[in-house]
Length: 86
Length: 168
Image 1 (tube, rainbow over the protein chains, first blue to last red):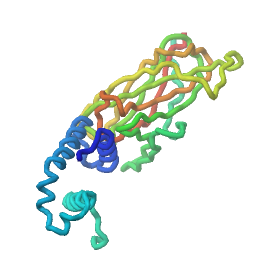
Image 2: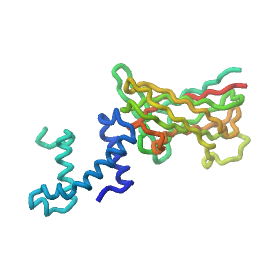
Image 3: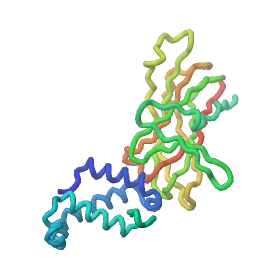
Image 4: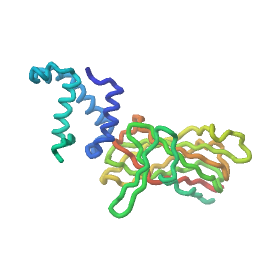
């Protein structure tokens, strides 16, 4: 289920506080629209993502699958620091 | 007629209520430290100062806010200001429950070109709360981050504010 307006706003607010190096060229409407589009994409592709998972992961709760996607994407973005990174 | 400038309102001298206030910062620049109040982009945060309306004569006050955008190079910021005035020995108002006069606001667009360049926003304070010479005046400066016209992402950092007025 997509985030409601309050949760989209809080995602938007915290993104600005945490990711200061990425927001230089964006206005608030730009970022708001991007967050809405991302959330809508997650909603629209939830089934295909679920179908792409192996059986064991597919059987896990939704929260696990959301975190799984988040961790992979954060690592791709270079913001997930692992203990092994030193 | 002379224009009187009240002493600068500096970040380190600001006062705050218990919630929704900007963060005090001292950014260590390359050659000198830059003191500021960082106003969040997604909230309406306020800072407060007080001053003596020395030699106030008449007319509106001019409030100049010096600021820079922490990360943005586009968009606009909405600043709001309000004053509350008390004439000592005359007004019977309880100082701790005194209300501000109606606020005024201004919207200022980022000038672009260079990040963290210093801007000046000017607010004409026309709601004067019956200000008189030597009044105790409280000033509230607020960023209206929730306002639809405030489109600037990231913090806006106030480095100084100045009030001026006519002595006649």
